[in-house]
Amino acid sequence: QLVFVPLRLGVRSIGAIGISGTNLSHETMDALSTLVAIAMERTRAIENVGKAEAARENEKLRSAILDSIAHEFRTPLTAIKASVTTMLSGGLDGAQQNELLTVVNEEADRMNHLVEEAMQLARLESKQVELDRTPHSVEEVVGKAVDSAKKELANHAVELAIPDDLPLAEFDLGLIVNVLQQLVENAAKYSPPGS
Image (tube, rainbow, N blue to C red; front, side, top):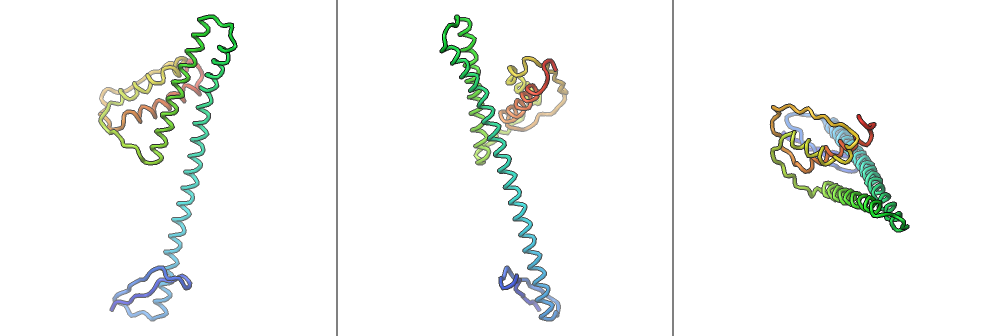
């Protein structure tokens, strides 16, 4: 014999339960169905709290990333503005102007790189990134990351110790180089010169 009992929370029905092979009283079946309904509702409430907490953490992370991007944009903009203001004030010889133009050029490149990173972040956020996963050597990716961070590493000695027998790893080369470059640049930025 199969008996179906509604799962109710107060007057609201959230489902039904089927019980087979037992002769329980109507009161026992109601009590059992109420316990199941309460357990299901509690599980749903816990899941909702978890989702809400994850959404809050995601929003905090997004805010921190935007603050970081804004800070990163200010540095090259400040250098460009200072260089242009100095050139406009006049009284500079050709060598001084070339030096300031070099600063403007390098900082404009840095801003371009920051814009590319912000666009990449937006694509990741909207899940519009297609990974180009192909086999690469660890030595290749580390070498590219260190080369990309050459300017930031000018006052730091870099020693690489990569075993020769490492197998190839499958990943998106551009994205992993970007990650490692960020780590190397941060290490250079926050380490004393010569370290």
